[in-house]
Image (cartoon, rainbow, N blue to C red; front, side, top):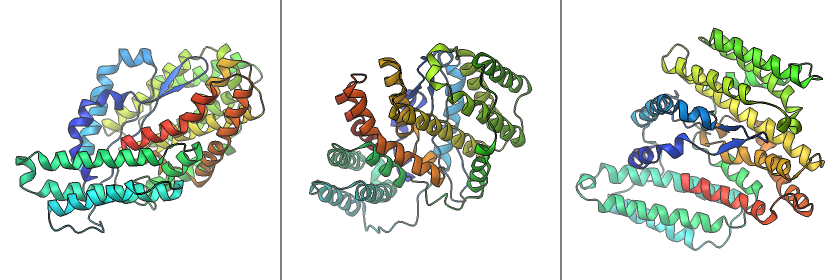
Length: 400
């Protein structure tokens, strides 16, 4: 989007926060990090992405190389992103554009309460208006000579965000799900994308693959490590390699989830580190154009989304059925439930299959009752957990 250009300084200045997004915490204490951010050009091709999955130790050790790698993709975003010429707005001047932008803020200020669907429509309308206004004032010769244009635009933008935050008070996790599912900037653009369609077809049959024998957890973990070690040694240099890796890894991951309640008793460090290194190698191969960047970004994004949702779903079921041992496990499971709503960004939202969208809504609908039950058993801080949806919504609004 055009407005993305205007955020260059802010984006680079706060790159560490982009590079180190919300952590995906396992009960074992092993931390995973996930983010994917991607833009597309006019031909619909994907041009850039940032996706990181690493723990804190390796993040310190490999930070410089990864920073350069993702900074390259960030530059591609800035280089290839372009204005949407299908806007319904037609401004006569920069002043006219800013006046319309202020009018939108004033109209939002008059609202007292809106439901999640209408809230989503207001966000989409704002996003279109925001891009068009910025594109208009940026073309004005006075834009470079006078800071007042950008200052006025930024002030109005901040004021609009404050109104959205005000309107989102006391929202539920289901409200968060509805808003994020309905405000992806990529949803319409990628609706009939061939790469996305092929990837969805690929992932749709993964559940048909049988789980591995899992009576002996120690042996299962060893087999998982041996599988990852083989791919570390052989590498992934073509799409067939990547698809084979994702297919087999998915079997191990789903088998592993059957023992999620025993995480604290397992040593996951090696699996975490090897998975991280393999993912890093995959992105380096894409960076070097040995495997198609567009396909890698889509398939890997869907991989992460699938893992987040499968993890959240099984944790949700365990909490609903009371299969928890202690305070630590209850909080860990609850944290994993909220990860899809924290970590899945706008592009990844556009990659969701219909059943995954339903899963997000269903888990979100169960959140309040789960918190109430855990609070009754004194296993979680009830008031803090109840306010999490509001905080997640506020966080989302500030990133728009």
